[in-house]
Length: 288
Image (cartoon, rainbow, N blue to C red; front, side, top):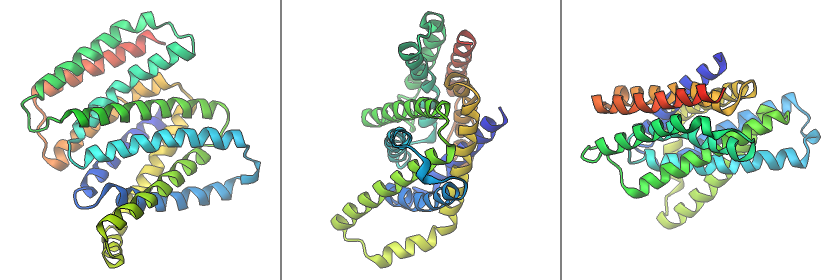
């Protein structure tokens, strides 16, 4: 459990770092810059501790498939962070446990009947949260809601596949390395396309790299540690239990958003968050 708690705190802090740095830099540039460091670090650890030639095609394919989902989820999340509050991503992350339950029901012969009450309570809390935000300055449009749905589906599915990969004894560092390399490659492609359209000079990019060097290096260390601890925790539990333990991560993210970005958290917000959290905890009790 200590691994998941550490990962929870690191992911929450990482969300704040993403949001703060995206205020003055593009999604593709920050994503590429950060993944440059994380790729180098992950590859270094991978080559130091393992003989890469021993990894099978199946292992690499499985981790790359998961990495694609993680990449889509990350891009969706960062696109939202550019213009919307961290609170929304946190709320949608709370819904991820429903998708995990549905996966276990479809593919693992899980008895979903015992989960209906928990799912119902989570849904009520979510609807109430959206309703209270209709006239709020933090409200978002339909496109942003769809981005959040895509983010939740991708991250939820990636977490399940990572759990399966860990059960197949695929090393944690291989999963992380494949994910970060893919993010870096896609980021480079996006940067190239944007640079051709906007004609950004090399001098401008160099100036940004220098200005954000220490910030991005900090982000890289934080996310690598967060991923490492989360995979270690996931390896000794299952997605539902880890999902419930990670309930604290969205809640911590919401608190961080209030502290760092002065976002107001109303009483109705806490009621909705409490209802969703209770539903998720009840779902955990019904599935163990």
